[in-house]
Length: 246
Image (cartoon, rainbow, N blue to C red):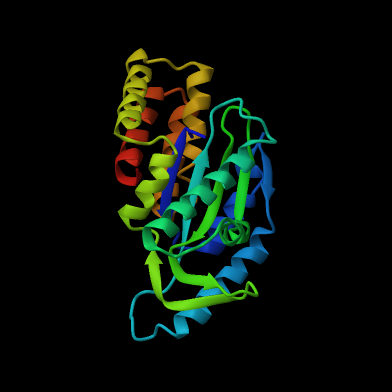
């Protein structure tokens, strides 16, 4: 289940981000698939607000969603890439449960995974899924009637010890990152402005869109460079984006 990319980022404006993910004009030649993303997101936000009311003594720890983007190799079938992404989330939560002794069984984990909103974009060259995962993940368990019991304790999913598990599951260990970097350097040295390279760059740019306004404005400049055939300028801008966001 190795992915091309695993990105985990905070979202400043969840409504704006979802509008972007569902915008067909922004995702031309891609199939947009989601799991009632608006309804599920509203439910998770209401759940987090209820939980927050019991946490008022912990100032500043208001739950916010994370954007988790899992991208799969070109050619991954439309029937498989969402299934593989959900399996990866399941395995990730299982490892977190083991690490934190949450005692969640597979049914508990599957229930959690199915509650996570997602928007998937299918393009044969770049199939990927955007998950809207709660940044603050309350510790909870289920009683014998499968009723959820929420604890006052929480897990900050954005911490390295948790995010690194997902990066590793996605094949993004040190060796993979070095190989990926070498491949990008080969592309840069080729100074190619072929349609293939432009498509590859546009695919990568897409993963960074919608995270914040400043980044979106910078991406517009990058896209203009590509449209004008200034591939080297575009690559330099993309390198800045990688350094600041990967």
